[in-house]
Length: 187
Ligand code: G3D
Ligand code: MG
Image (tube, rainbow, N blue to C red):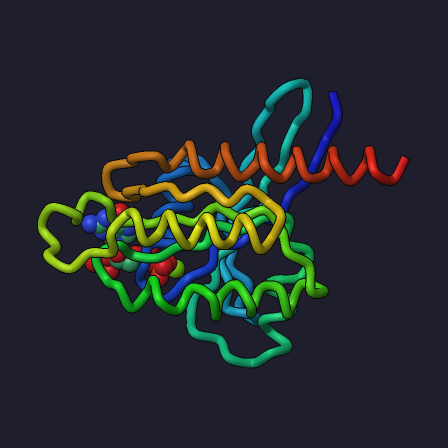
């Protein structure tokens, strides 16, 4: 069985649900760490798929750390990212490009596989001015075109568990496919 370690970063404004998504995905039985120096939480999960054992290091930025040295450590070596907004707060959607640029700038100008996530889908019915799914889908399509990766848009609820497992599975598959492509190109 081959082994792979992927660093996955959660990106997005405060309170969009990054930590909740990570916790819902990992369940009760995960090891959690906190790197005080960079204000980031991380947790590790192992999964097996197609004869490969994956170790996922899942990171999310805790506070609003604004020192660039700190952000560099946070983003460095990211293999894939979940770009998260809160569908009930449109202002968290409009700032997504900033988060993406921050990742790229601090990860050797490399673009990596991404899944765009509209979290808090359970609030859709009770929120009059939520971000329409079609808008987010359009942005995901633009990102696909711009990045050369297929960027899916998925709606989740860390509260009910809707699609949480699926977004992580999709991201891991996309990262694996990317590394396979790189390996083939370098042969
Ligand atoms: P962050 O890590 O991005 O800063 P958190 O966000 O995971 O800390 O979540 C912020 C708040 O949003 C929390 O509320 C959390 O319970 C809530 N939340 C996260 N995901 C969802 C979701 O899918 N649906 C709903 N309804 N709420 C969600 P509190 O009140 O604990 O601060
Ligand atoms: Mg958090």
